Length: 224
Image (cartoon, rainbow, N blue to C red):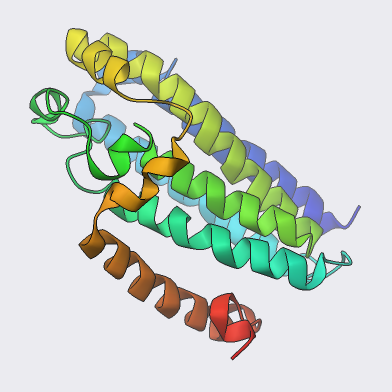
């Protein structure tokens, strides 16, 4: 295997592994030893270092060493990335899973918008992005990164449920009872017209920027 791909695989394992370790078994002892503020600094530095390693190894790896799935794959990826962005954007507002002093209060409300789809819209947004890139079957380096993101998103969401039950108690248990881990895709249209418009506009912008960033037209721009 190409040395850059070995380095990329190691970086992906380090990125995912340290994220899980610091978010779960190591969080409490480190917070107890150095405090929450210092822990967040350590967490951020480790995440930045492993992510930077992954970026550098990705750039050094072969860019297009798989046959690809052709136009069918591009259509599938194009369709999938719009709801991925919708879920991500919707997750940034009134999400009890995010670190927020009002999280307990937020968890008391009835799920609406993207939370009517899943209680983990951010994680599923990342998962859909990863699935879209895996479906293209474009390069081994893309499969490694997308596979790591997919694993981190879906396993991380499950582990987040366990952590939040400990941290938030009955508030999270109540939120969990009202929401779903596995998405209810039929609820996507109820995310709201404003969110759909914002997601579509950003989707067009990001897929257009893909031309300059990766040298490959993506989204609707591939056929325009």
